[in-house]
Image (cartoon, rainbow, N blue to C red):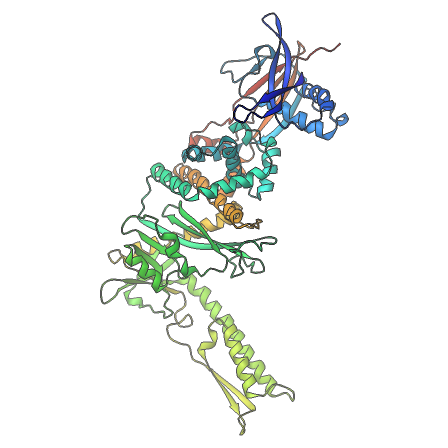
Length: 614
């Protein structure tokens, strides 16, 4: 085995350059010929004086000397030798008939080997990767990238980004390390990730952003065909995530209210439009301090939802202006009312049971003009929670008033009328609305400047959380539905909340490490694509009554590995076999439910005859 350097001319540009190949001399048909084993490329990094050592070490690895020699070989040479030896064993095509390379053999293949010589090498994860590829193939994702003119190398990098986010969510740099050192994804798509620079993953993100709208439209069209989706329900909500590091160059990185309580960091907001089954129809990134109510028209415009589609959204987005826009453009709506007045007539309500088995009372009212329905809902569980909140903040408010009274009895305590009014105002601000239920009176001296006493009386304001805990109101222009259908349709919005939890906790949406705006947007979009693939798997598995969350499914799938087993044979040759570990029962159940082979990558065999040296 040796390395041959060959001068080559680029036919398009006329440029002359050297390329490198790993070559073996073999006797074929009575003649000695040079057979190319691997193309090492134009930018081969090993110095020429180290080529003999590299070739010798590759032969030792394939010949079963994986452990014995490596301590005496420089680290760079050892890593390169491990990589090229692995590629020889993993190659899906024959190297040459005389060298004994072979692909999958469906029949029996009995070999006489020395059991004591067994070595197991290069374990790589394969379970999540294989099912990630399956999900993306169901969506026609790779084919769409090809149609968009994305070349093979960039397609592989995009797959690395998306499946890496499904398997081991992290930054692009961490994903690159995972692809190189821990994953068998490269084997499954016949791509050498070890030869790919980490910057390629960033460029792949740029390519995705360039075609974002086309890709989103294609994927949703594919899932519609795949699952026969009904487009009559559209869910819309926003969440935000935070940045790590300096992001001065990103205009969207703004401080605001963090839903993860990370207001110490700049934020970016992700808006999602989903259908009723949980697949993303459209995604868009906004500044971290965006007002929720101002995003609806931006993201729904041009969505081409069918006439009369029902839009469900929470209170933060359901302004009168947004509701008016939905009506103007032919949408129906089902939203949480922004009215602060609460009411509920027990005599007019009906009882239903939530999915969790909790009782719920609901009351339906239709407006005088018959164009809108309001659904008042009374939850006992919510009542207990809100009552406890009201009591806690009321207790805090009263404690603050008592401190003021104690200060009046102290010689140096605050007694100035204006200052005490300010303190009472601050107490009301901190009371989360509890202060509105108190009538507070400051008793002043004859000058009116100093306070001599303080009196208060609790008078609960009707129609508030204090008098009607556990009550909320939905509003809709769908007036033909009964109470229960309206309420159960609205609860789909809780599924959207679970989507955001999955994006953040299971698929690496947080945090964002990129300083450039387009890269930060790309990070979020890759996570959305990973979610779509996960949703395909979960939707299919649900039909087989497998309802685990993604974290649990991923844990089940992640135990499967591809491993190379190396044996010495009686005739002096070395037999290398690379294949998957047997799928364990829970994983096998998943494979069977999806109709996928439980042995991703198949079996690769390489019989290696050592070269005699004089």
